[in-house]
Image 1: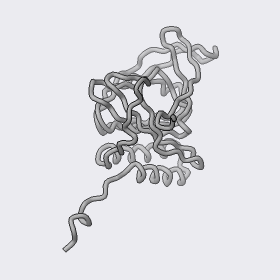
Image 2 (image 1 turned 180 degrees about the vertical axis):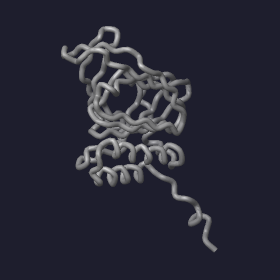
Image 3 (image 1 turned 120 degrees about the vertical axis):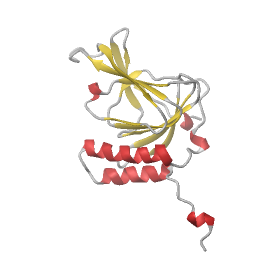
Image 4 (image 1 turned 60 degrees about the vertical axis):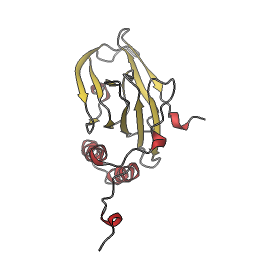
Length: 198
């Protein structure tokens, strides 16, 4: 008779997920199919994966939210990050330079999507308006695809409970474009990995 340990199902870990993302990218599919396949992997991680290791759940004491690096693949160029959000913490309104797939692991996310109204002819200036507002519970997965102007958004913890999300980027995940919606301006920003700081 087999032991309980051998009969127990193997949980899907962040390491399993990163390896499977690498395998998807190795197939060299069109970006929309690549992101769709990665979103399926993210849903597996978010709905039945292994618990996130404690080392990735540490919150920075003063940052608006915490970004902890899990994996960066310098060959394929993708990055996996765990974000930890205190009560009602949020990002700036921003967009990314490449594709992104997000899964909510714990808590509830609030995502506000923006529409860009100007023609981008004036550098550093942008006219935005809110396009939609979405509540994303545990297990939710969202994917962003180029072009960038269609992916302007803000993400927040929708409640007082700590929220945890896993983000996968098609780039190093260290830069974004942040928008000041009141002033109608934007600028590139640098993004830190808080678990890599001394």
